[in-house]
Length: 70
Image (cartoon, rainbow, N blue to C red):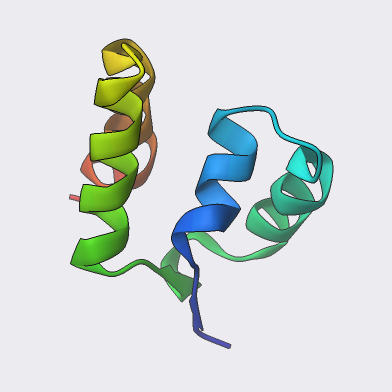
């Protein structure tokens, strides 16, 4: 099954919010080649993390999600 994951799923994990554990279980249960994110999601995550001074978290996110698939 292919899933399009919303920005909030990733932000729950990255910002260690209330539903972080549930979001982690969702991401862990999906085969790496079967989840997708939109360009808008990627840009939204980058914007939010950079505004909060979390540039290293964004670099790691890119390495784990986008660059790992190249």
